[in-house]
Image (spheres, helix red, strand yellow):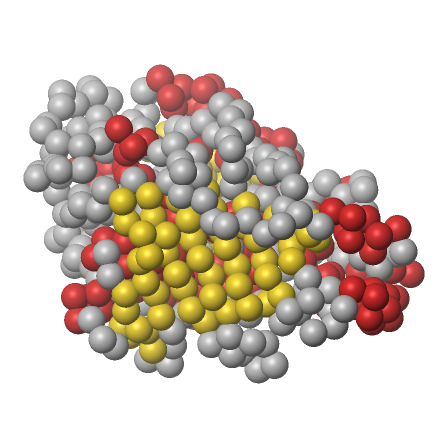
Length: 476
């Protein structure tokens, strides 16, 4: 193992080129990009799903000044939580069914933003790609491994279509810092990653002795429930499924892992070239049941050697008291760069969402979204930083994911989180949810894309067949 003095010396050499011109290590600044894009026409955009997260997306889109919102679609148009966005774009045509929107307006739409529940991302994104429309889809892309693979294949079959997953930190400071530190040899030989999200979840008040789905509730007059269900098996309307509560249930959501994994795994997954695991297993499943996600989960993903990169274990922790063991010198748990959720600011907890990355030479801690990494202990980080050994992100770098998407459509740059990359990370999370659902451990064949020692788990890669009328969305 290299000692700290030797590492400082070698890191300084490998980072020298980046340290001379740190701005040159990255793409053009946000300001330059936006000014360049501003000289071009606005992009005709449709937004599907305009309540809650879709509301936040719509506001971010409006801030860019780069889109002309021509259509709004939501199964509950007229509900209180969709009114604000309808008022923001009064000239946009309104629909309750995205299929009708495409049927009537395909020639007027250039791009689609998808912000519906997890399970319904797939048919909307697939229809957009087939129609030749650029698509920005919230994370996680799909609820099943197979659906993600279909989106990967569709994107490859339509290279003219720009795709972007909505893990917005992938256009933030952490993205460019992580990339620079890997290229400079600061981050190398990573053998373990602990990722954690320990906030309270919606299902934490549910009865884990559940024996059936909730009883039907009176349905809002403005709700198109059959359209909300899309390709999923029929369920009676319940408030425990509606307005974000869908995330609790295996049939509709991806739990805490699907909600936060894309914000915590993303840079590790891309720049460490993790790909798909060879083994996934449950180390903890408190309150396990057949309907909704555990009260606490610890999931272990094992990745093999990749070229000169060592085998790596990634552990996921959720549950309000299910913390990973923190290294000596970890310091304070920060909650920086966590955006508002449904208009509400994130409330810091004892251990805020983040990750600890272990390599042979250094240990790193990071937060969520665009929060940058720090070397543990803090004194070593400061020493390396003062010596000019750590390439960084320019202080005036204020970029965002939506501008990257729109600029990619305009041919100015490339998307940071296209489906060909982001869907593979989502497949990792799909495998984790299968382990949660069955409370089991299984081996996965990266070459064949199959779970090789558990036929029940392997069947869940595809999941239930779509409802009648939705079959064509599963055909490229």
